[in-house]
Length: 351
Image (cartoon, rainbow, N blue to C red; front, side, top):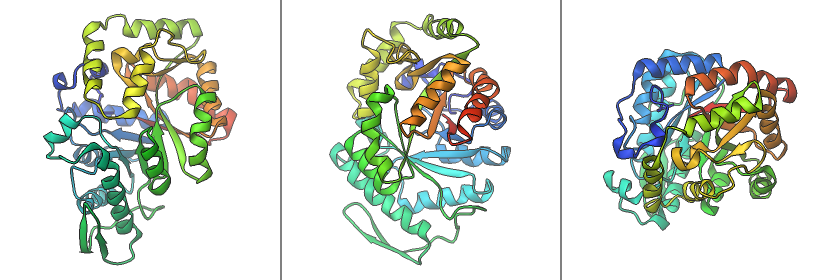
């Protein structure tokens, strides 16, 4: 949701994007999300965004329905501090907070935060980070941990996680690599990844599902009354975007260590942009990997969600272009269709 008020910010280089949030647009976005059946809103991490913890804390009291999915990386704060921050948000938002663990994209950006750890060690540090977080949320007394990256001695937090239904926040972990999948199985409630054709994705996620770890997809939607209108809207979206947008993502990819980002961007650069009759990569070169989109009529988009459900996907982190308009369309036309067909088993979030 950090794009609220600037829906094409994904077409720009990160260095050209303002990190000052339009708070009125964010509050309106939260309220529209609640009306549209969205359960979580992502406050994403990056130097080109507002701080996700501060943003979630500011927006939490502005709505009484949606939860905030707060992103972090293990190199930017101690696990004790992050647990304290999440717990503090829970006290002002009535427990409506969960966390999104991300490995990060760019070694150059890591240095902005003083993170000099080699890329091949970041998952090891994240493993320790998550172990400590879960120890605090287990609430079994002072936390002690001695590892390669963290030493916690008699750790205590007098701000507990406050929720009417849970003892800890739900944990989402983003990624596509073997290490990301391994950590998701060990620590997370859900792995968030980018979509592929269901028949291609199914064997990749089965090991996670077998361990009772949910799988969610990061995907955009372009839904209209007819397929023809949806396809026209999809191409109209990218029509004003040019080589500068493509170059911004190509340049970023050169310094990215994220398999999920790089693989999905490469997918969008292939000449065939329709992975299925409704899964379209045509916006990816211009808007980045989150531009991979489900495109079609209301019924076709509904069937796409159900096709993913059939292989075990139960959560979706959605984007739209423009975000408010597409979210309204989703809430009025797509979600009611989905609910009628699958009895409420899918969960919807918004980035």
